[in-house]
Amino acid sequence: MSSLQVDESIFDVQGNNPQGGLALHISTAGIVHDLGNLIQVASSALNHLGRDPNIATAPGAGVVIAGAKTALERAGCLVRQTIRTAREIEGVISNANVGICLADVGAFVRSAWDENIRVEVCVGSNLPLVRCDRVGLQNAVLNLLLNARDAMPDGGLISVHAFVSENSKGVDVRVEDRGIGMTNETMVRAFDLFFTTKGEGLGGVGLPMVKRFVEEAGGSIDLKSILGSGTVVTLKLPAMH
Image 1 (cartoon, rainbow, N blue to C red):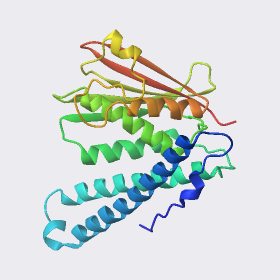
Image 2: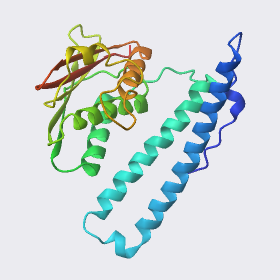
Image 3: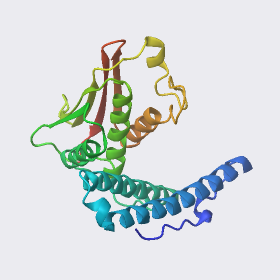
């Protein structure tokens, strides 16, 4: 993986924003820069492991290493995407093939997760391209899959369905689990940044990020959950015209 260098000046705050905003953006630039360096180190370590004949021939090692490499590649894409956004050089409207995106994410999680978690992906026929960034869509679905997995500590099935929306103006991507579900109080705050029912870890970020991604693409997100029965999250994405 090539070196990922970040020029902190691209995160300067324009206009009359307060100095605190400038400090926050410079701090963000530093975090992105350090993430890029850590990704390089981890990627190099995986390449080294892959060349070790004792490890390469171990049962299942190839699949695990491939899954880890895919995760690092996605992390690298996130770093580059952050830089592009900060520089405001998008220019061309992004579009994504939902079927390909879901197939990639499904293959990735199946190679990395335990066998007690099953992921079923079903994609309707003749889906139009959707108006969003491909990597952003994959990361949004991955966030939902991670939440679904955490909601099923004993394992189970996660279903991912993509189909043309009822108004035929877009594509709906539905992620459904049969996990512990949410209370009404939790659902009300599910999209609040940093709100989490998890005792530890990086909770409270995934769903707000998914919501932001969908709304920036011009779509919407729908959440339904029943305590003890599971959760269904639907991303409603606009089609490219």
